[in-house]
Image 1 (cartoon, rainbow, N blue to C red):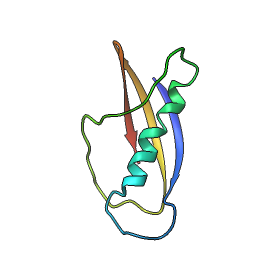
Image 2 (image 1 turned 90 degrees about the horizontal axis):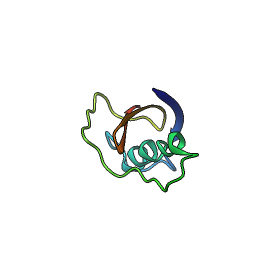
Image 3 (image 1 turned 180 degrees about the horizontal axis):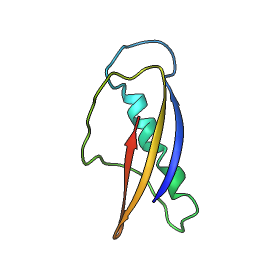
Image 4 (image 1 turned 180 degrees about the vertical axis):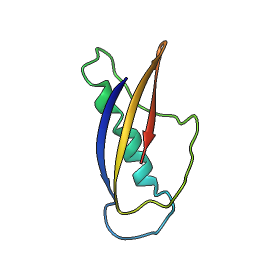
Length: 79
């Protein structure tokens, strides 16, 4: 199991949302850090499930865990 830690921050104060789209996108894109160094082009693009337990705050951390499953690499992301 490989791990990554990413600091996430909303651009400017604006809409107050439970899960801001920019925060979700940043967390998904942070998975690329665990895929660097491979001899192929990768792009995280789908979610299997999503659970929201509390609203996001302007600055958060994402803990990303990698789980290799055949040809598809899966990640768990906790904000």
